[in-house]
Length: 496
Image (cartoon, rainbow, N blue to C red; front, side, top):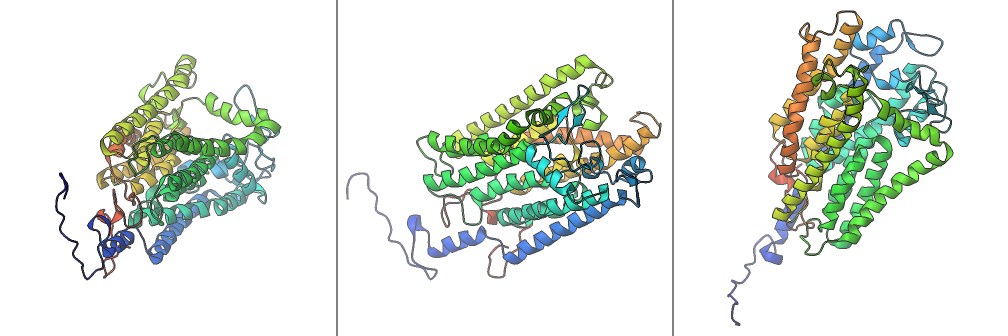
């Protein structure tokens, strides 16, 4: 025995199997693997519940369809009043007219934007992949109702995929997605489900059922594919592209391996994969129809803060925030994105601080905090953006009080804002103290804003609900089996 060595007791064989590395037994490894799995039957149940919720969501939206249609295919009678009064508004149906969608124009190539901000020639105000989805949904449609139906058929598989992936990662906690109010209210409010699917799939590729990435090469390979998915998400709704930076930092720091040397080559490969697919998708449109392609971004730049944007910028600065106040609108145009980028920098920096203490960069937590900063500070906060946030309530171990509080505030704004629009259009005025609808809007706007401020910090401190160890049967940072939230077990002890 050399100096400094200490005698180690011999490994004791057990009935469960021979001892493994660091005293772990084969049974320990099997148990760890079982903790990271969810039964196929449970996944089927989650997907069926997701389908049922989306079916009810679609049924609600169709209350605004027909029963008659004018020569342009617009639902009648009284469509403009009904969609607010009856709480069945959807952007999909509404944008049937005014963007060339009803004319089946191929998007962007021959489009543009007028000095007053009106889109022409088939250009829509969304990134190119969403524009293609819109065009595909309209190909066989002759009315806004047929367009809603065909678009829903295109979007529904992405919602089902999100339910499947979240169930595989976080088990029954995925019920927050499958039966939550956001999916019920917004599944077919806009074209957001494909982008959400890309963001969730990126996490699944890196931390899915086959176990977390083990080894540098495997980590970089999986993270590069995750980057490709985030690049596709960027070409759908932009926001998933923000998650590439924390993903690259996760690879830079070696993932869960606590590498002593920073992997710059691996991190750059992830960024290149994401940026490459985003450029590849956008380049044909930029080359063949630059005016139309650029107009989709110009539209968002020119969009004014008003009652329809649902953001704190409008409600916090009334009456100065009216669309006609050019100096205020110009200020928001630069201040809002500046503060959004600052919130991103703070989230990334705090994530790095956590890495210095724990040895692992919390890329999912940082992504969630970045999204919270965006939702709070961006000049537009459309109701369906709640769909972007819900997966993080599933993937991260957020206390139920935060989740329920946000969902309640979101329902208040999601329902109240349309009734408020109806009241205003009916000539009742803008008084927020007169009527339940206006008060619901205030509860929603300010309740949601306060919760986003708090969630920014909560996200950065929490742990994931999916397996984050170094390999199947290896060390586990936050094994799902340790999260008792909505956990169901087989009689033999394997988590569902």
